[in-house]
Amino acid sequence: MILLWGLPGDRPLAAVARRLSQIGAPAFLLDQRMVARMSVAVSASLSGVLRIDGAEVLALDDVTAAYIRPHDSARIIERTAPRDRIARGRAVETDMAILEWADMAPGRILNRPQAMTSNDSKPYQALIVERCGLRVPDTLITTDVEAVREFEARHGTLVYKSISSTRSIVSRLRPEHSERLENLRWCPTQFQWYVPGTDFRVHVVGEEVFATEIRSEADDYRYSARAGRGAELRAAELPADIASRCRRVAQELGLIFAGVDLRRTPAGEWYCFEVNPSPGFSYYQGHTGQLIDLAVARHLAGGPEHAAALRRRQPARRVGAGSGRRVAASRGGG
Image (cartoon, rainbow, N blue to C red; front, side, top):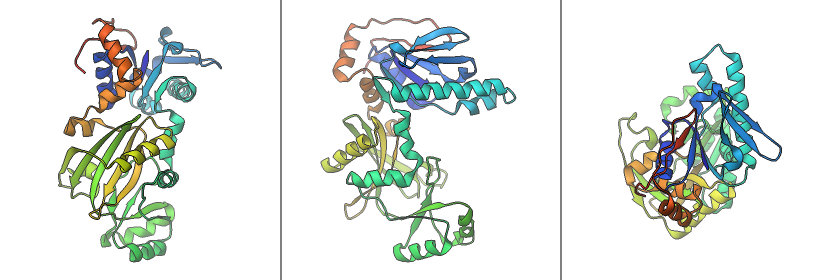
């Protein structure tokens, strides 16, 4: 059984669920909207049971793989029952129990929570990236305004961004930001040399590599529409050495599935900005047609050969609706 944990409306999770159904791999979607009704019991041997409204819905011993994209369950409770402290406490306990199980459970876990924490510190992650042979832009993390001005004088155009896993909009440091620099003393900020060139998002799934080339005039192509500028995405091929380094950095970070953000300069040099441990691949797949969801599903099912065998022998079937949701297996196209 493959465990899917998160919200049904999450596009990457839903895409993988559909692919698992198509290749005939049994899967169970643990819907976080039901967190107030969940309970988890895990023993020291990692045996355990998931219950909803007191009824057993999944034995953890049956789980051979998991794709986890959880949101903060406490925030889900705050939106649905803001005054229910008991429900909030139960949500936090449930999150912790599943996260701890996912860190230690046997099988294919995409990705283990402990490995995903590398993204909580961009400076730490950058050290690993450099060790794997990918360049990282010259970086300054500071609360000192004068240090920023000296760094700018040395490098020219700079960008600033979050140090942690909290998403931020990457922006160039412009003259009109001068007055705001005084706020640095209250908030350590990361500044980097602005690397000119073309962006690439590289999705690594085990040994498979899917590269997307992005052309945009926006500082951060993810928000190009907000900036009044477009973004053009297309499937691309990486040089073999760069693809190999992307695989290596994912492996070094303990990630089976990773989104590596690169930029190629006009001179042909490659720089890495960060590695996303829970990539929202559906945005890129929607533009390129790359079968990233199928690669993830096959990996969860035990590899392409095992996935093909499952698909050949698994008859179409229906699974009755329950407290959790099982993803029905079928002979759909792959």
